[in-house]
Amino acid sequence: SAVISQKPSRDICQRGTSLTIQCQVDSQVTMMFWYRQQPGQSLTLIATANQGSEATYESGFVIDKFPISRPNLTFSTLTVSNMSPEDSSIYLCSVLNYNEQFFGPGTRLTVL
Amino acid sequence: ILNVEQSPQSLHVQEGDSTNFTCSFPSSNFYALHWYRWETAKSPEALFVMTLNGDEKKKGRISATLNTKEGYSYLYIKGSQPEDSATYLCASVPSGTYKYIFGTGTRLKVLA
Image 1 (cartoon, rainbow over the protein chains, first blue to last red):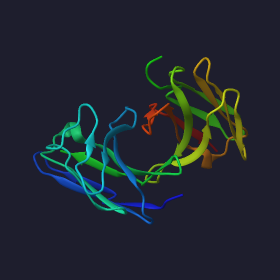
Image 2: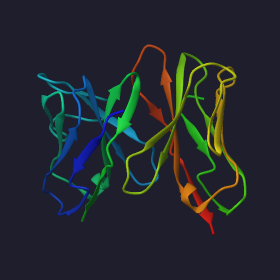
Image 3: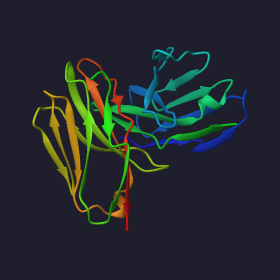
Image 4: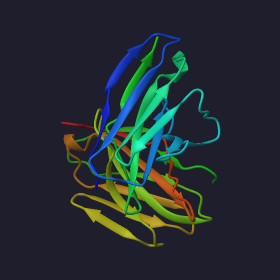
């Protein structure tokens, strides 16, 4: 398994601002992902974070709103840009290790 | 079924009761079914990975079954304890992809 940490664990932000969430893994992994879970909804994949190239976004998610960095095989960031109350969610990063996904503890974001 | 659906959405049981919940998923193009246990402010914890029709897995008081022909999985908890209180997520993985499709989860509260 992989041990994953995320910072911050939670935040309350004002509308129109941006927040960057960090994800650190204790070992090198090829595939890292970012998910969100809006209230009452399922965990939804935002994008695959690719090391050394642009992230691959799922339908409904765009780079301008959710820029992602992946500078190496153990670290990634997700920025939630120009936030609105609809962005209030739990954001999780995950890694694929031996065909199984392991998750970070999540970042609980509230946008006022 | 096009999406992954879980039922019930939430339930309360008394300590010592046994309980079960359902995960329904698309039966076509199926590769694997994952169950996770997710406590607030913690990382989702992997419980089971199942791939074969008729699979049964057990971990302590928790067990799961899989029917790939009809597209459902059951999770059973025997003799529920307050520490079992969590959200239980299932995720279906279609063949040929690493992408997990999550249900909305079943929120379990075990009352002492």
